[in-house]
Image 1 (cartoon, rainbow, N blue to C red):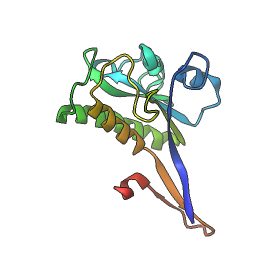
Image 2 (cartoon, helix red, strand yellow):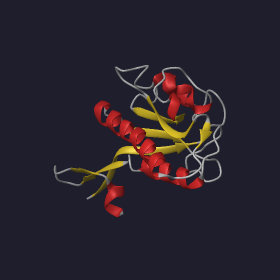
Image 3 (cartoon, rainbow, N blue to C red):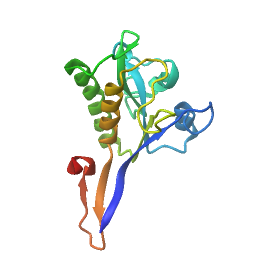
Image 4 (cartoon, one colour):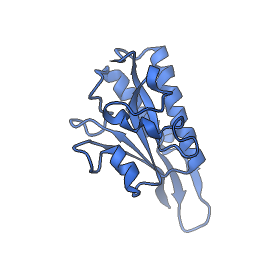
Amino acid sequence: MGLKPLVDVIGTVFTKKGTYGDFDWQILSGKYNNALFLFNDDEARNHLKKAGKGNAIIRKYNKYAMPYRPRAVGIVTGKNGEGYTSLTHDVKRAIDKTIEEAREIITKYGYTTVYYSSDKVTDDIIGTSIFDVDMNVRLYITREIKRLRRYIEWGSDDNQIDFDYDLIRE
C-alpha cells in the first residue's frame, strides 16, 4: 500500500521566457496538456479575458476566454492594483472563491498537475513580483493551493480510495 498523486501541485520560478516556469510557453508547448496553471490576479481583473502583466499573461487562457477547456485560473492576491495588506475575512472569501474555481476546473477536466509561481527565496510560498502582498496572505494562499493536491491510496488490490491527504494530516 502507498500513496500516488492524483493531482500534483508544483511551485515554479520564472527565470526567462521560453523555458520551464514561463507559463505561457508551457501552455503553448503542448507538453503540459494535463496541467492547470494558477496565476496571480487582481479582484477587478479576475473575470477578464485579456492577458495581464507578469504571470497574469496567461489570463487569456481562463474560463472566460476558453470556456471549452480553461488552462489557467487567476488566484486573487490583491485588488485595485495593490496587494492585500492583511488577511481579513473578506480577503479570505475572495481567495477561497478563486481556489474553488480551480478545484472545479481540475475536477471537470481531469487535470493531473497544477503549477503556480513560487518565490525564489522560499521556493514554496507563492511568489508576488508585481503586488506587495502581506506574508500572512501569501501563506494562506499557498496553503490553499497545496490543498488542491489529492492522492490516491493504492496497493496490490483493486481497491483504490481517492482522498485529500492534506486534510487528513491537519
